[in-house]
Image (cartoon, rainbow, N blue to C red; front, side):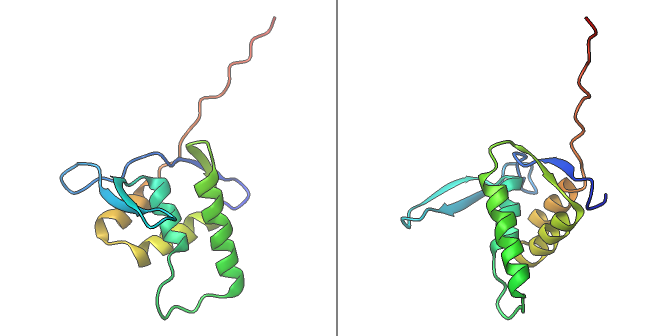
Length: 125
């Protein structure tokens, strides 16, 4: 994968427990209320890039890039999202810092599985 050729990933995929059930996580809203729901690849990717690691030195530019990536992932309406190799590495590195083995392993694996779209059929009329 190169920076110039983004790959497509399905961010709606669920993160699973070791028992094969959807991983449930508390999601806190702006009003302080929380609800429990299944963790998706989108949720994990956003958390991986926006979570600050205590003591980590992150440049101003890196923080801004992580913020812009998180906002793009969070606000993208389509479940299939294009990511370039740099964005994938940022997500994987963040996931390594933020999550335990089960979630990190699935994020890493899912970001290695590119969604291949079927070529459009062109009909001649």
